[in-house]
Length: 277
Image 1 (tube, helix red, strand yellow):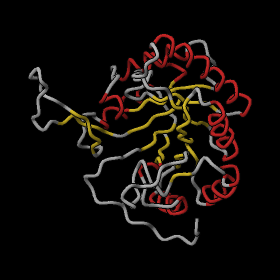
Image 2 (tube, rainbow, N blue to C red; image 1 turned 45 degrees about the vertical axis):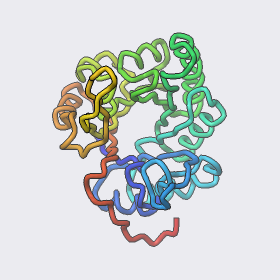
Image 3 (cartoon, one colour; image 1 turned 90 degrees about the vertical axis):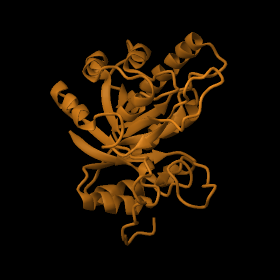
């Protein structure tokens, strides 16, 4: 297996600083966050807004050569691109996939629709199958792979749902991101069974951790209210060590990308860099 870091989890670093730091720490690669994000409401960099290590989708065509050169010159590979364009947003999906190919990255995430929309789930699922088939066809023409992530509150929270969505599509050009932390929240199946079910569609792995907490509040019916939050790798409800062992015993030898959105530890200081990027 090879190990990379998703830049959503390095919000205080510019792209050049992220490259410098991760190469210096001995990581094999980097996974770029790609979207037009909102500014931070506090003015401070955050995971989801004002993230300094995020590549903008607008104008990405003019950025790819420089980013690719910086990454390559530091000795890092690109495990992939984490796009946020939803499957039915075909113009943006196309930009994400073309940017991924231009960067020299092997694969890119295509976001799935939420499961709590007004549209009936069966109709939404079938429409998304058509969108994913289109994305897979485009990915094939570009020599890359389109990825569907196991993500809570979307139509693919589990391996079973993702396998059903992709059934019949070519696993050379479409696959699944198995995400340990998301599965704490929704969709967990026994990992080895999930790996076997996904088969050749198991294309990529994200590792983070989460936990369920309560402040003692109860619903009007008297049930205890619980909410989920991100946790450091060793402090969440998932057994990360066992998960990596399960992957290895299954024969998985692809990328494992670290995502850490917990705030238990102090923010990372920015490394020195000679690039203004």
